[in-house]
Structures are given as C-alpha cells and as structure tokens.
Length: 308
Image (cartoon, rainbow, N blue to C red; front, side, top):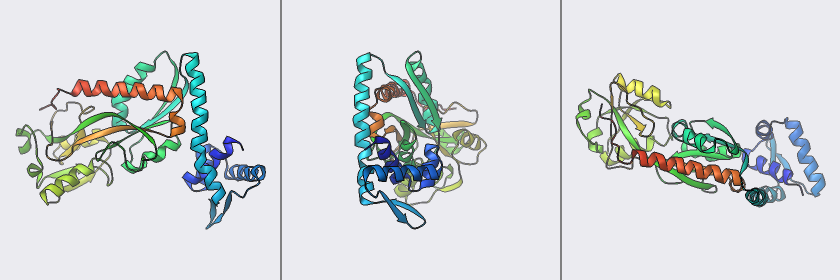
C-alpha cells in the first residue's frame, strides 16, 4: 500500500470528480484514472465504481481515503521529529488568507521568518465563512474568520487556532447624525442604509443580529467584498458599513464607532489539516502567526476607533 494511493483516494473523496482532482493535482483526468487503476491492481480491491456520469469510491475506497489523514499525520510527525533533531524547521509552507487578515498578519509573519530555512507561499481570497475549510486541501494553513464562534463553519474536523480577536466597527459618513455618538447600539441603527457584504459572509451576521434585536429590516443598497471600495462609498454617503478595526485607515469623510449590544468581534482563525499541521515548519509558522496576532491585539487594546 503506497501513501500516494491513499492521497489520491482522499482527493477524490473530498473533491468529488476526476476533473477536480486532476485540476488540483496538475494532472490530466486520464492520468488520474490510470493511477486509480494502478492502485486497484496493486491492492487487489475495487476502489471506485461508476456513479451518474462519473465515479465514486466504493466502501473499501472510502476506508482507505479516510485513513489518508492518519497515515499522513504519522509520516509528518516522524519528519517533524527528524527536523527538530536537526535544530531548525525548514521547507515551504503555503498560506491562504482573507485579504484583511493578510494585510494585518503577513508583514509580521514575514519579519519573523526572515533569514530562516522556511519559505512562504502566500495567497489571499475572500470567501463565505463555510468555504475556508475546503481551501485546506490546497494550502498548509488557511486563515479564515467567524463572528459566531472560534471555529468557522465547516472546519470542525480541522486543527484550528485563534490568531486574534478583532472588533468590527460601524463606518459612517462624518456628517451623518449618528457620528455625534461615542458608541452605537442596535436601536440607533433602525432605519439606516448599508453597504453590506455578500450573503453568508461573516460581517452580515452582525446586521442580522441587529435586525433580530430591533425586529426591523436594514436596507442593504450594495453588497461588496473590497473594504477600500466600501470605505469610498461610505465617504460619499451611500450608506453605513462594517469594517475591521486592525486594517481600516483614517479616511477623510469617514468615522468609526464601536457597536454594543450584539456580537461585533470576529475571531481570525488558522485552519490546517491534521497531517499538514504535524509538520515542524507548519507548526512553527502557526506560532509566528499567533505572535503576530497577539501584537495586533496589544497594539489596538487601548485604541479607540478614529473619530474623524
């Protein structure tokens, strides 16, 4: 039994189709199909079967796919012990993160790993909360966020670590009547207009909580992902918005106010598959990210959001 065969079966189990496995592993579908046949021949078992227009794992194939993480973790732990005995973690660690967390954490991470034997491959993407877990198939560490807890939806089976907890503030045009208040509460927001985020994105849960608390509906005139664009629309008076405190810079025409009465703090969370987390270099990078997150929290602990 070769580990590469277990990995292939796990990929098929998680991604669902030969085409998706081929794209993710940079192979052709015919090459993936041939490798499956090789695995079946060497193991003497039928591992896949026709289903609809594609293939699915047999019961035996699913057992092997489910065992891939355990085998991979065991191998990674042995490798980690070897690296630890040599005194320094090394190798490439790939990381993907939501853009605002990338902006907040990557500079500190790069500073901490500078001159080490760890090479970083960085990526950024903005997703619905439940989609971050799926990206751990392609990256060693994925940094997502949640406003409902410390584990993003869908990541319950993964190794998770909270890197920081960040307040989410209400951004208002500086001439808005609510800008005269020091802090805001749900009742203050009744009848307001918003530049929101796409459905199922974590920030939307704050507006939903406000709606539930006030038994009213808030008008979302736009739903956008890019925080800089959102800031620009707030400045021109399009509506109010929710913005993360760590990376929102002072901008003419925009003020920030804390929101009380509903949960308005997000957990920025690192996710990793157990086999990848077992690597010495991955765990070292997670420690560096945790330190960078602690620095951010300390820096903003006593800082109020800018008033103008």
